[in-house]
Length: 394
Image (cartoon, rainbow, N blue to C red; front, side):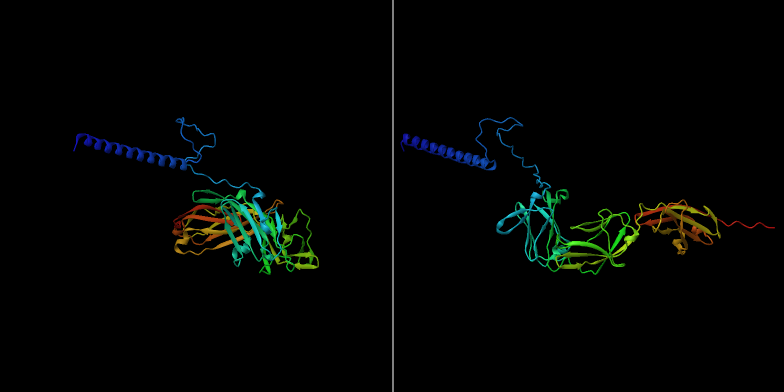
């Protein structure tokens, strides 16, 4: 083969290899540049290396990949809770709304995600009428075939999420009380004929005479003697969403009460409420313990008293722990209640532990625990048992 042809063939081979390498390099570079543009939206071609800590883009800086993006909770305003009406219309809800029985209720709450709270009746058994769906930007609550029993408060809670951990933001909850007026039922139906309610001296008492229509007129009545109870707005007040509130319960409020609602020609009575007066103490008891003697000889009798001075008509319960329990010695106590002199409505409650014919096993710690409706307090004392003194010879 001629030398020129040999060198020509080699030169063409080298040139072809070089061109192929250039083409491959360009393809790789273009793919890398296209990938960078996809991962950084709006990025322009580099003109110079940016300085550390500064951005060449005038817009918002990109968030680093390792930074957790926290969900922005909805502001605590009624604007984020709306009622879905016919034909795709929305209505901002206030504190209360009314929906005719049989119609559907649709509430839309903006947030991602949100959780709902509904009246206890629906939480226990909704018969498949209640559906809650979380969409991308809002939660939707739908209740169909509504009845007067569905009357109550519906609450939307925005959720604060980090990764998969979410919790309710109670301070940003949005609420609406929904009435379902029923032409046949003025009161929300109840399965109980009597409902027992405690009248606590330290807490307002609510009689939940819940009506299905905000237009109903509601009065409070006593069963015996049959009389209407005065509602002055101070001692007793009425709220259409809650019922009657007795702000400062007293013994004379006790008894059987009920509510009467009237609307148009319809007049109905509510469930009867049996009010039981309970004088709640202001604080847990402060007992004092005292023994007849801190040192007792074998065979003698021992008395350990535990007393509490407190409010009148406040029950105090005493319990004891004593060394004789270990051998099954039975508990003998005497309890009493007596007024305290001085004019104030105070009383002394006392429990006395009796130990007859003390033995060595009765030596140790005696603990008294006094308890009332506010809590319990314990006090202790130690007893030493000494040998029986020998009688002197005449």
